[in-house]
Length: 114
Length: 111
View 1 (cartoon, rainbow over the protein chains, first blue to last red):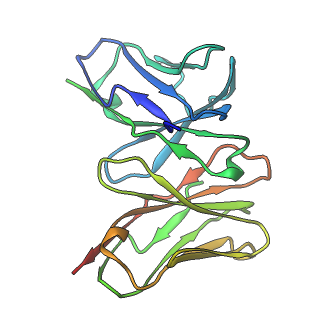
View 2: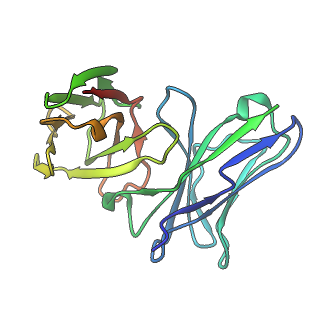
C-alpha cells in the first residue's frame, strides 16, 4: 500500500505561471482533502472532493485556484497566475469515509514562487 | 474557528512527561491528533469522538472533555523520536469532513 502520493515534492514557478499539484489517494480511499501550510502555521483547509465531485471548496481563494478529482487519475490542485503569496506547502490527505476515520497525509508539495 | 493549542513549544529531556492542550470555542464532535516532523507529512496519532473517552497509543494517550471543548495529549517517558510538531484538528459534526487545525505545539526531546 503506497499511501498518499503527491508530486512533485518541490515546485518552483515564476510569478504569472501556472502550478499543477497532483495527489493520488490511498487505495480504497474515496475522500480527498487539500490543505495549505505556511511556516509556523497550522494546516488550512482548502477543498474536499470525492470522485468527480467538489463537495466543499469554502477554503479555496475565489480566483486562480481550482481543484478536480476525475473518475480516472489523480486529484489536481491548479493555481493559475501564481503570486509570491502562493508560496507554501500544499498537503493532500485522504480518508475512507468521513474525517472520523482520520486522515492519511501525503508528503506535500512545496511551492516556491520567484 | 481555529482551536488554540498550548504550550506553543516545550523542551523535554528523555524520559520526562508532557501534556499538550487543545481548546475550542465551538462545540466539538471529534478531536484528531497528528505529529509532523520537519519537512515531512503529518502522521495520524489518534481520534477521540464525543463521549469523553480516553485513548492510548504506546506511551501517548489523549482525553476529550466535550463539555469544556478541550482535549489533552499526554506523552509519558518521552523518547527522542517524539520530537516534532503536534497538531490537534477538530470537527464539529458527526459527518464532518473538514478538520480545523490548531497552530501546533513544537516538542523537542533532548538526550
